[in-house]
Length: 253
Image (cartoon, rainbow, N blue to C red):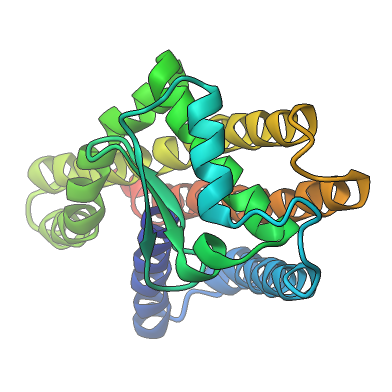
């Protein structure tokens, strides 16, 4: 689900950038430029860590695919397939198709970063098998967010224009638009415990099964911590986005 979250926030920020261009609102600069810079720095740091760790072969000499299959087997999960997908940082677990999707570098490589990511995604499969409540909630929100993220901005803009001639109808549309963005914020917040728990399960299993040595364990934790930072920034951006929209449109009604 990583790519879904990043794509959603990308759409939101693009729309707000258009709003800034048209209305030259300085609040946009004050709120979002620091968040965008922080996101850029964390993603760069994450990529540099992965590049650094990829140069050191895992002591167990297991690929990401082999680690994922072993973790699933150790948890009694035999109906989930481990497959390779294109792209970078595109790793995710698909609960509908029951597949652990690993980017080509993670799938094939044998290093601490690949081990951490493979185990993390399997952590989601374990959550699914055990009925982890936060994952269930996020799965329910996915189709709702898919619809509201596309329609919310247009409903909001329509409501802002209609309010000038019909305050009641326009105000109602603005409220619906803000509610649509609130679903996106709720999704980003629910994502946090899901991701943190998957990382916790991954590190615990890697250490308990002695898949990594102490040096590699530290590297695995570091890789997952920086990856978690991307979700924290996404949540902050989503909260700031909702507050900005409410201040911009909601207080007029």
